[in-house]
Length: 167
Image (tube, rainbow, N blue to C red):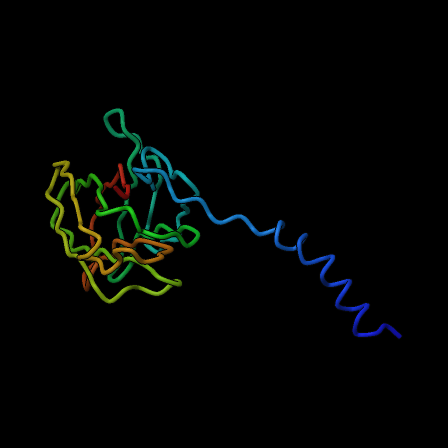
């Protein structure tokens, strides 16, 4: 049976090796951190529950086409990452033929929507760049795992979105 002295000696021999074998920390995302630009980028995946078509060819670009029933959403998911070092979420959006879709933009932490919401209504047949300060989404300096664009109480016609990124 090993003595206390032999156990301590064995542990002291192994301890330096354990300290040298630390797991690598996740690298911070590059700036800008692109979610979508003609295709999903940097490990982002589509977890939507709206009717979503990725890479729809329109005038030389390939935006996401989204349409849906009440409360459905475009949801882009990523492994958890920190928003530290980023100040805003930006994207280009076009309201399609009719425009006026009421969309609530929310961030996700641990798969749950953050309480703060940023509302937009895209204009018909017009591309607009949207910039949302992360503080308005309640995620400045937080670790998040998704962003959603959720329709509200009415069915909504198709809109198009592209160049989604954190800056």
